[in-house]
Length: 217
Image: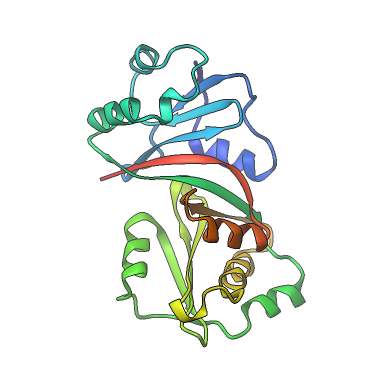
């Protein structure tokens, strides 16, 4: 079992295209913040970001078994050990910022920053992220950005029911790439069963890089 400095180091590496070696190993790092812990599954490698002892993990994960850390028995034990609950198991998708000024302007055309944070999706975003910013378009669609797991930049979108199936979500997901600094990357978390949302982010230029089980208070 390998030990690395922080989950932030690993995620920043992935943003640069550098992944942990697909060696069927496990890397244990500290919980990224008092707010959360997580299990991140990558190609041929697992990262456990939680304040637990390596021996505790070794007792529960057979060598080379990369399915165990994302299955209910281990996650349930991790809930008990950390005093947290599994919030979701999501696919992680990643995209670089749009850098061309014309593309950035076109992607954000029609968006207005929202200062009223009473929307349920906005309230939820503040529970799991810092520095949340919310934008609304003329159709009532929302795009949110903020600092989430290990200080990565994350986004979420909300598409009105009467705008579904018209490419609206793809435009919002692409807009998120223009709402961050040109040298940055942005992450999206999508429930694998939500095929429509998955297709939306893929069409907007996001690429799947792994999955995560997020544990929160």
